[in-house]
Image (cartoon, rainbow over all chains, first blue to last red):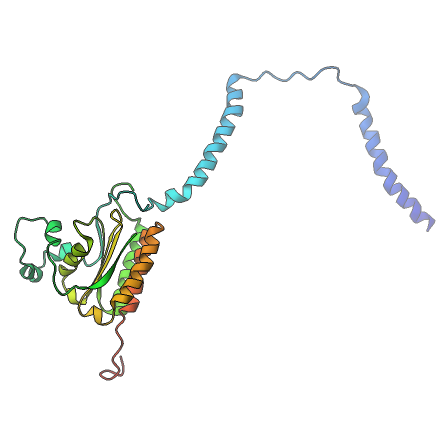
Length: 133
Length: 130
């Protein structure tokens, strides 16, 4: 039991003594003045104190904007709409060129497709629903 | 909104997919028009619907994002399965999406719903294997 206690005391004191012994050379000389740093060029100063903050700001801005840029333009209700008209499924404008339909509509020549369309009101299409937002 | 394209390729694909799914589910033709409306939206939509190759068996969905107008026009045959009340319900859900700024999502989900509602019940009397 006695030898165990000795080992414990040595285990605590050993590292402490080693640290104190290693520290003595550092205490040998107290510096009297601040060490003189190498002079910094204006370019270096600009890069460090200007470049890094600006770079950080640009990086954060890009991270914020990246998702919306990737998703493309977003529809905002209330703003005007300039996109070209699009059709999904069968297009009524293409259907205009079908001979079978052209005979039935009996449209007077000369008018554009759009203005012509607004006048045609076949009794067939009465059902459905509408909404505004 | 910048001039040119209304949808991204992904959005266009999702709407195309919805149109195809609705046509397969219901057996009716679906057409979606997204663009400017000239004159009164309802009359314009009915005019477009009348110009489709088979109006009686077609559903036309018109969306005017700038004029904030939505019209769903159903043909005479389609109306037997897709009632005005059902179309109004779909219009309401699409309107909610559009007001929140989700144009493509609103169109796609609306077309899916229309296809579901217009689903033709299979007649078991004439063809038991259908």
